[in-house]
Length: 257
Image (cartoon, rainbow, N blue to C red; front, side, top):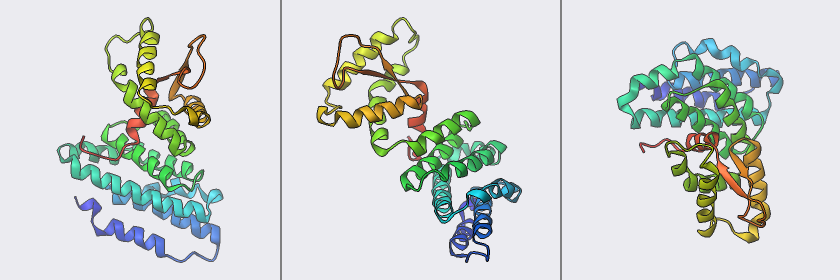
C-alpha cells in the first residue's frame, strides 16, 4: 500500500508550509496546481503531473480561502482513499483501475471548482466522500457526480440530518421489486404516516423543516407528494427519490459495511 506512504504526505506538508511567491495570485495558483498533482499522486495516480494544467485553470479564482480549502479537501480525500485500500483489499485492482482512470482526474478537478463556493469544512469533507465512494462503487459518472457535488456544498447540516431520517424510513421501499406508478403514491403515504407518528418531526421546529424540505426538493433529492385536504407539519408528504438515495449513500464515511 505504498501509495499512502510518506512521499505523498510529505508533499502535502510541503504544500502547506511553502511561502507564497512574489505574485500572490500566481503563487496561490502554483500551490493549487501542485496540490492537484499531489492529491492524485498520493492516491496512486500514474502520471499525475499531466493533470496539473487542470488546476491552473483556477488562476482567476485563487485566494487564501480557496487555497486552504483545497488543502483540507486533499487531506480528506487521501484519508478516504487510504481507508478504501485498507478495508477493501479484495478489490484492490478495481480500486487501482478507478483511481488511474480519466474519470477520477476529472472528478478531482471538478471538486476544486465546487470548493471555491464554501469554506465550511464539513461540506469539503462531503466532496471527498462523494469521490471516494464513487471509486468504491466504480461510478464516477460526470454529470451525476457534478449534481451531487453541488448539493454537497449547498445543503446545511440540518438538511442532511432530515435527509437521513427520510432515507432510513423510505430506503427499504425503494428496494421493493415492481414498485411502479400504480402503487407508489399509496406506499409513500403509508410509510410517511409511520415516519411522522414515530416522532421524526417536531412541530415546534416546522419552519426549519420547511426550509430543509425546500432545499432538498430543489436539488431533486426528494419530491413533494400531493395530499389533498391535509395541512400542518407532517401532512405535506415527501418521497425519497433514487437520486436522493444515491446522494445520501455516497456521503457516508468509508466503511466495510
